[in-house]
Length: 270
Image (tube, rainbow, N blue to C red; front, side):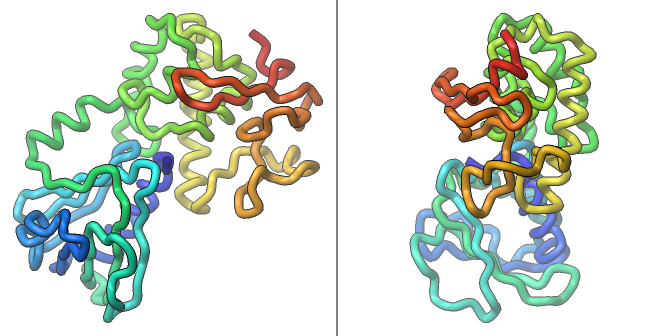
């Protein structure tokens, strides 16, 4: 599932390419056809992300809420756009404030729906602070973490606690700070939490800029290749049974609340 930096990167792209002008909205697949008709020809006022949620705000007051889930993806296309390929839930064509034609297809999202203002407020009220939003308050997350017996590895993945962090950032930021993912939240100090938050802000901004998650410090970016040819190296994520890049201990794997968990027992002692 895409992590928060991907949604913020998409929001910035749609803000630059589509916002400020009228857009043509359609649903070649048909599942979003009635909603698309309500949006077609209106001005896309702005695009923003909150955690793993993308929001398109229209001048009519309608808001399109998109959650990509496991399989959702946006595909850019030249204008005029060719015939749709695959199950295209929503097609957007516009020029935005730049005047340059731009088209994009959305395929396979978990959610693509129209919300009204109060519904958007209810959605964002359920989400924790997002490290990529300038209005984020890390103490909102700390309030919940410092009172919880749940493992910090679980809390970081709970979108009600902190929005936008997924499996990669969870595994890597805890390694970078030498904190076991099994440590109860209430045993994480405020100083440790602030350092984790500041690191997430920095790492996720790099992710927005680069389009990939760069989590290994330059001095450690060597040795064993990444878990995938098109991804930067990681410290522990998807490196189970491999030696730790720092201490040589065997990277461990388990399942925590239904999600794969990776950590180094040497660098992240219980």
